[in-house]
Image 1 (cartoon, rainbow, N blue to C red):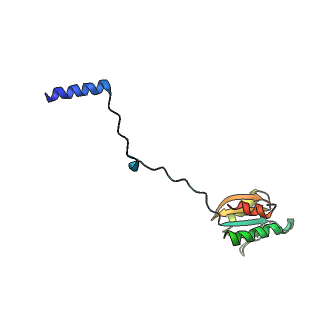
Image 2 (spheres, rainbow, N blue to C red):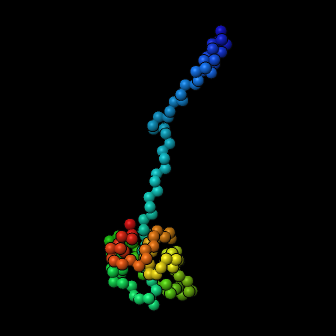
Image 3 (tube, one colour):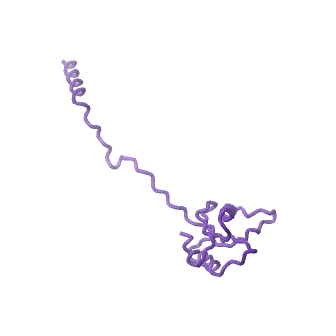
Length: 133
């Protein structure tokens, strides 16, 4: 008798198909990974060559405001400057390399040792401020 019920049930399953699989409750479903936020800028360096002219006033004013208002380390760097051993300081080496690929002068915005953006010759103080998100 049990065998007959089993065979009938198996036959019905083959004819009709299996019932739909139950879905997981909302609380048990895997969550997608959180979106990665863009890295926050930690430094901004105006890279220039002194033979082509001095740092414009609006750039120094913008860098000063970045230091005070946004707490970003904002500096200038002349490309011919080196350490005592003749090397570019390690903290700004990636930024100087990125600026040299672009045209000098350039404002390089970095997060740690990662270059976020390079802005060629910012023309106003607001351009300097807008370069750093």
